[in-house]
Image 1: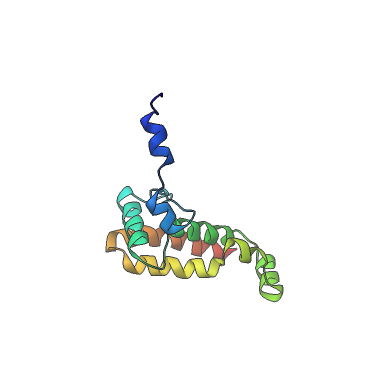
Image 2: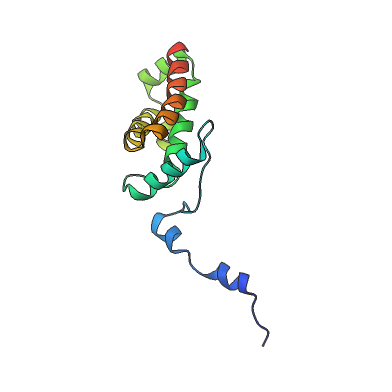
Length: 129
């Protein structure tokens, strides 16, 4: 009987962390623009240790807030009056902004300063638009 290759044996083993956290893998590390590697690793540590976060939540909240900041005032007013059905599938950008505040509050001063500079640039663009 031929021997199976070790890589194939490892590929067939269940991943404990993936089974615990659903479809997102725990080893995934998302790079966020304009953040140092130490800030990104601190965000990854926070996402692992907090029970209200999953790996990649901070990056997805940042991308939702960035996409919301690109909208025109007319689109935002329309969403306020009639609701936005995209929020049901993709997530609420305002909740994402709140999550970013919670992550910044739990980071070190230097890491929070870096993330705050990225978020404040998006906030300024949103206020100008």
